[in-house]
Every structure is written in structure tokens, then in C-alpha cells.
Length: 86
Image 1 (cartoon, rainbow, N blue to C red):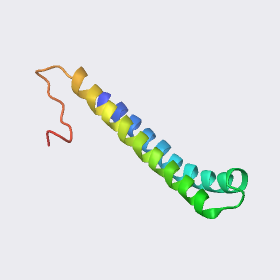
Image 2: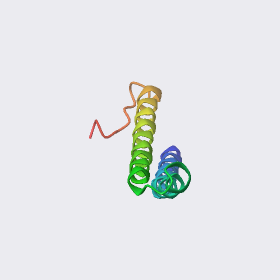
Image 3: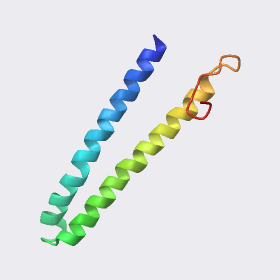
Image 4: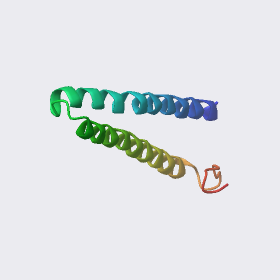
């Protein structure tokens, strides 16, 4: 049952980050083009790229924290299989 809840949490995180990856760059492009850069599409595109990369970095950070948490909470005798041990 614990594995099922872990998979549900992973799926929820994936869905949230996928939505953020779809929404953040588009909204940052149009909002920054209109309100920040006064119609300059080049700077707005750079803003969207930064937003997309921020979502990627956040996803990697959350994944690494989750991996560390799983390896710390597992008892020494009961080794949980991770990507590193496959």
C-alpha cells in the first residue's frame, strides 16, 4: 500500500510540473511582452525561456530531495530499489 501511495504522489508531482511547464512560459511571455517589455518580443521570449528553465530546475530539485528522503528513511536491512541501484 505504501508503494501505491508513493506512485500516486509521484504522478501528482508529474502532473503539476507538466501543467507548470505549459502555463509558466506562455503566461510569462504574453504578460512580460505586454507589461514589462512594452511589446518587445525578443525580451519576452527570453523571459519565457527563463520561466521554462526555472520549472525544470524546480523539478530536478524536488526529485533529488525525494530521492534523498527515500534513501534516508529506508532501514539498512530493507534496501529499497531506486534508479541508482537498478
